Image (cartoon, rainbow, N blue to C red):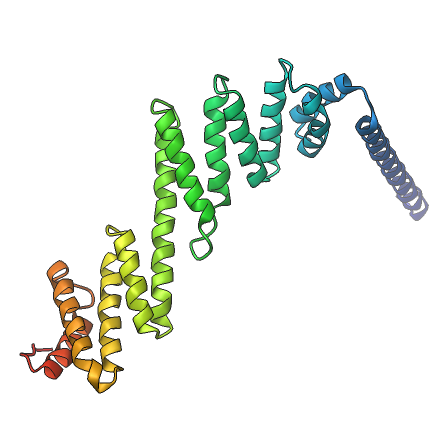
Length: 281
């Protein structure tokens, strides 16, 4: 193929590309113009029809925009239930979980006998589940998810989703446990040992069966010990005694611990101060 033919073919390709782009722009512009006209239209039957078409096509933004106009017009009709359900589903699929949760709850309240009532309760719980952040952050939505899953399991004990909800509820509870552990440990890591003692005690009280129990108990023992070490002379005996009492609680529950070496050192320093028998290190 000579140079002239190559140039001709290249020009044809460029021309065709430009034509495709222009056609695409025209199509998009036409589509946008039609949709804008639809929004301004007073033909609510057409708008309702388009809601179903757009939903099936996955155009959820258009669905929710149109339903803001359509739902009030059909509130007292037989189609109100289906339109409300589509609105909740489309909002969820747009990842607007806070708004979707309210829509699902409203649906469940308005249509308790609907075939979608069970699913609405489940989806409301899933909205909170989706909003639950990593353990270091505020766990308001995690607690709401636990509450929502509990409500679902109570109302629908025979549901095919029961086991799934039970697992998700446990997952959310474990997140609260981890949040409690992180928060309790924070004061310890900052060297705020008196505050750490309170925070660690609260975490153990709230979640007595936590997987972090041994670690939390050791940190509380060491926090009490560090507090005693840093105390003024008049407070030392009282605080070393508190550390000793915590030591006995710890070894009673964990006679063989990963922290045996540190626990032994704490005991020996405390025992020497209180003039009681020490143990071999």
